[in-house]
Structure formats: structure tokens, C-alpha cells
Length: 403
Length: 153
Image 1 (spheres, rainbow over the protein chains, first blue to last red):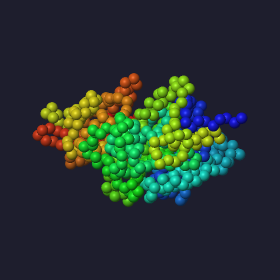
Image 2 (image 1 turned 60 degrees about the vertical axis):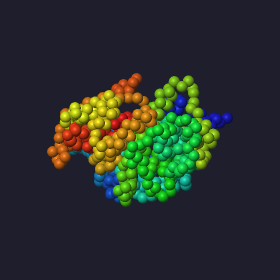
Image 3 (image 1 turned 90 degrees about the vertical axis):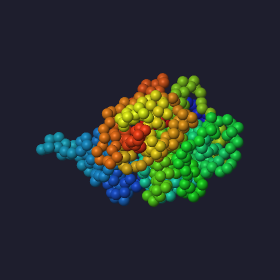
Image 4 (image 1 turned 135 degrees about the vertical axis):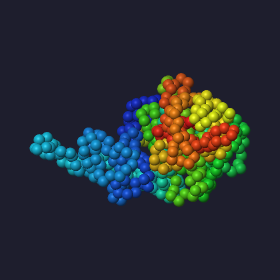
């Protein structure tokens, strides 16, 4: 008899606390057939330009080799030292500081210091062949100016991996070549899956994040919906600019987040410019498992999720804009930093609530979290009062972990 | 403002006010048309404008205080600022007062942590009624924030 399929509606808290699970995630999930964020193509425009980054704590370097984008584990094959130490730079070859081994920009070992020894003494064995050694290479795809990498050489291209609707959602917020306009990082004291679930959780957004609701930036009564891809783990939650719709649902729920008495003295931070000409003022898009694209008003950002062991996760917020941003639009992106990131009126709470969950996960006596809002499936829905996208995440998670 | 006799005192007062969670006293250190920014060294060297917090008026600072005291959810905590002596940069018409700082974060039931280090770059408005901060740029040494940054620095 085959094992029963894991539940999508009840997730044991032990999923957030077990070292063994994390070790399997590192091997099977993160180094399996999934796409990771490596950087923006605009950051490495010329041959030899490189940027470094991490995938779930594994150091990676991405480089322009001629016109191609190449990515390697940033590790010398000799003794495992880091090759590139800076976050960005320009090189004509990789050169290890430890023992001077060198590689071309395609990852081939080209030089071994004192390979033949000195005056006939020492050196590598005669049968040592440099062509047997290369840097560990990742598969790379550049999509809409974003560089993605995968440890699995046979992974499907981004478009079929994400599915049509998620691809369209990414293209929507990447209509031109993105350029970096800011970066910050947030260390959250929870398992990485708690943070990922939070991004898939359209139910919480306008309840926990009082600022959103108070200023009517995002209420569940606004037009919007959830789109979940076939694999389950990538989704879009979106809402349109506030219309004069019915707010009685909030008033009758007596939600803490509904502070009618609170008003901003200088609401400049909230001004929304409809830059994509579709009235959508909020789009949270997840690309399974560790990437989030957000559009919150005019703040555009790629959130890179970096698991740091069982009980910590780092979120790197890569803010971007476009070369031809008007001064007004760039100013809006700047002001809306106040909404997002570690200090954001909206986003700061996700840093706190993950830790609240994690603290309770350790001594949970076999208990499970309940994910039943909106049913038990992971289908797209016009309602955001659902946890379908969280169930979708777990569906794809289990599919990968069972491989 | 009578007691604030000069920039160095205003810098001290603003830090002490935050440590006491006395936001009215903190706001009193700023002029109405002030600007306030928190960014990181990494953003600065890369010429990336989007940091952590930006305000272009005292009202936007008032909004930050109103939001973190009324709306936002986080574990209650407070800071302890340790300031260096201030010095004035010579390369500006309206001289900039630079003060190094470290800020510890104190949360009930948790170890006190070294939260951030960095420097204030302050410009002042001098009036008969007193000295107030016209512009404060805060550049953090590190780009990683533990959990969240709700209370200004």
C-alpha cells in the first residue's frame, strides 16, 4: 500500500522545527528542479562582469562570459574556498586566493600554481588532468531582465515551470529591463516555510497589516483574486485600486485593523500611479519556492528568500525600477519604501508574526496548523478570503520532497 | 526648545528621547520642513536611492510615530543609543554634523542585541527660538535588520 498523501489542510508544526527535514530540503528541494533568483541582467552588462549571491546559503557567482550568462557555485574545486569575494566586479578569469588555481569564465580549470613543482620536486601527479575539473555549473535563464538559476540541468524553462498566468504576472511587472534602485535585508526568526506561507496567505494581508486596511490600500472587499498555477506552488494575489465598494464587511467584523479614527497628516507615501494602466495596485507573485515579486502601489521588488537553518530566514529585498522612470514615478518608488521592507508600515509585521508562529512550533504536542479557509483545494479564485495558495505551496512542496 | 542650545545638544536630546520612547520630545528636535532618511552603506556606495525609511516633512515623521504607536503590530521594545562625539564636515556650505552611533535593542524576555551601528549626518536650522534638525541622513553600516525597524533611529 502506498503512503497516504500528506494533508494540505493540516500542517504539523514539526515541519518548521526538524533539522532532518531541513537537510532534505537542502538536498532534494533547493538543489532539485526549481528556479532561484540570481540577480538582474542589468548588473552584469559587459563580458567579465560578475555578481555574487546565495541560493539557500550556497554561494553562487554569476558572470557574463562573452554574451552568455553563466552561473557557478562560488567554490574552488581544489579546497573549497570562495572564488569571488566581492558582491560585484569584473574579472577575466576566476582566481582562487587560497592556492592560486584559475578558471576561465566558462568554469574550466586553466591553471594550478606550481602544477609541475619546483625544480622537479613536488607538483601534481603526472596523471592529473586539468580538463577533468570544472566549477559546478548551474543552468541559467534570463527572463524579462531577471537572471534565474537552477541546479537541475533538465529543469523546464521558466515559462512552462511557472505556467502561462504566472508568466504573464511576471511580465506585467517587468515590461522593460529592470535596474536596481535599492537593496535591504531582513532576518526573521522563523523557518523559511513560515515566511513563504505568509506570502501565499491572502487571508491575513488586510487583517494583520492594519496600515493597509486603515488607509483602504487593500481590503478583501476590493476587486481582486488569486491565481494558482497547475503545480500549486506559484501564485498571484492581486487587488485593484480601491473603488467605492462596500466596507460594511470590515465594520461588522470589528477588526483591530480597521482604525477609522487614524488619518495620515501627509499622505504622500500613498500616492499610486497606475503605471501598468490596469488599475491593479497590489500584486504579490510567488515563484516556487523562494522568490516573491511584489508590486505594492509603485514599489517594485524581488524578495529573495534565503533559508538560514531550521529557525531563521533572511529576506533580501531587491528594489527595482526602470531606466526611463519619470521623476514623479521614481519619487513614488522612493516614498513607498515606507510601506515595504523591514521598516515598512505594511511589511514589518511579517517579520514579527513569523517569529510568533515559530516560538510555538517547538512544543506543539503533535498539533497542526489549520489551512481550511476556502476549502481543501488549491484552485484559482476570485475571492482572497481563502488559503488555497498556501495549500498549493504544500502540494508542490510534497511533490518535490517525495521525489 | 529653550534648553537646546546647540547642535550637539539636539543630537543628544533626539537619541535620549527615543530611548525613553518619548516621541513628542523626539519630534520637537525637528523643524517642520525637515527631511529624514535611513539608508545603508551598501545603498550609498551603489547610488541606490531606496533605503529603509524616508520622510520629507515633519508631518511624515508624525505619521510614522502615529502608525507605530496606534496601528502596527510588533513586540514591544526600546533602544539604547550610544553616541560618539559629533564633528562637522568641512566640505559643505551648510555644515553637516556627523555623529557615530550604536543602538542596542531591548526586548522583554530576550537578550539585548546590538541592533545597528552607523552615523547621523545632520544639518540644522538656527533660529532665535532654538536649533532644530533640518535634515537627518542616517547611514547604517550593515544592511541586515533583525526582525523589523519600527521605531526610528
